[in-house]
Length: 164
Image (cartoon, rainbow, N blue to C red; front, top):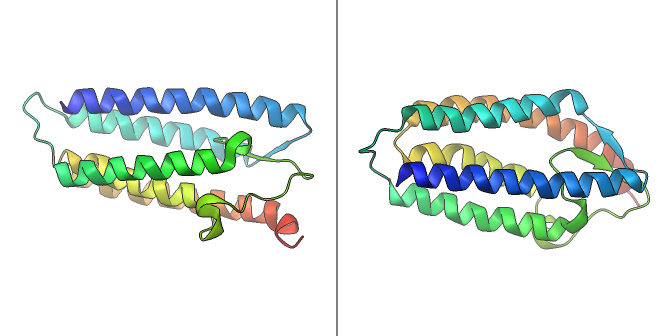
């Protein structure tokens, strides 16, 4: 069962990357500009390493902590809400389109950067569903540091549009 869960998460991430690539191409074609390109590959490496670290520690008799898995599933609903709220503006990169208004619907009505809150929860919840405390801790620290860098970049480029 844990391996099936991990495969489903990996497939979900691949499907999201395909959606993101399509949205990125459309935004760039409309004059969008990418920011923070230098740290993007670090996110790809981090998230790939996170899945591989979880996989490396699974064994065939692995028990599942259903409470942590339920939290992870709840976070997937949050992820879907973020993606639906951003619509064609959702990407895995920071791409701005100056003429476009900032999205202020869905979770963006109440929270800045809701996607990063979802990811922070996922980084903890999935390894914890398999009892991998060290993996949850290490990747939470690494992801947190990288996410703070990304948030600073994103806030800097969006600041002029927040004041409109």
